[in-house]
Length: 152
Image 1 (spheres, one colour):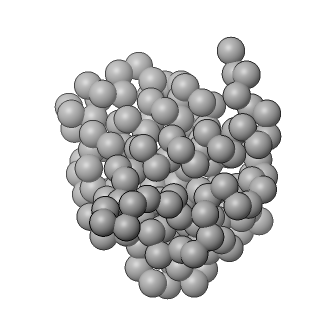
Image 2 (cartoon, one colour):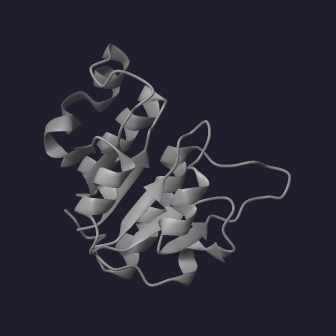
């Protein structure tokens, strides 16, 4: 099963929307602490509603803990700094697609540790997509490649 990993997410509404997305698409969500908010915030619960119970969520105390628990899996970092596009690789069902903080991305050492670095091409005069939109695009491609889109 595919995994989405969030590196120290800092916007609770985005995390809640990602919980809902992962529940609907049967995808594990891995959250690398610390978050920039308390996980119990009302804003979060209001958006993910009852989807929380239907989403497999793994929380890691640190990036080192995340790497240790996923050492046999390919970590694909989604970053605006990549040269390769998200649709230029073959996704495997054990892949972990790692997304950085909304406010700062990921530190340079994580770029070095990642097995792949991919980007979503966007217009030159724009900075980046919202993380929920980015996850939707990349996860849809991974599911399509592996014939997982007929979930229902």
